[in-house]
Image (cartoon, rainbow, N blue to C red; front, side):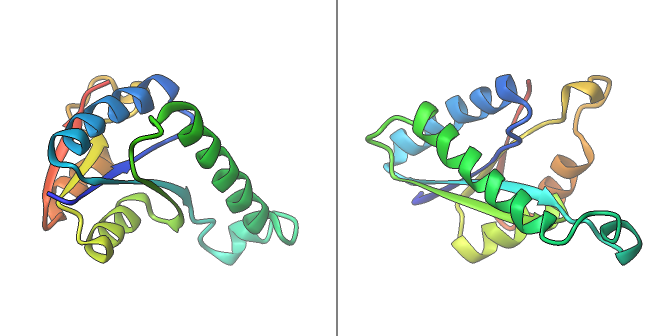
Length: 141
């Protein structure tokens, strides 16, 4: 195992730290690289994106990249080789695309957001589990 891809939602601090703990076990055991992916949902149709000021998406991506780098600096041990990735689109599509592009050996993903506590898997995790070509490690919050 050489590549661990971990998805992260920076708005879910506790869940993100649980994901990191699980990913670090795999990274350290296998001497793997850690790739941390955060996805900004797409604004989609022009009818939606037209309601935002020009440059809003670029600014949102820039802010997310800054926040992700800061989160990594604060939480990932310095001895771990880590690579941040900020993407935009449908969460499960971008995670699966990244896993293929990076030839990830395993994806570490949260089971669901806390607001979906009645579900075993949220919609993004379920789609990643169904369609991934590598192993998927699902972490419960």
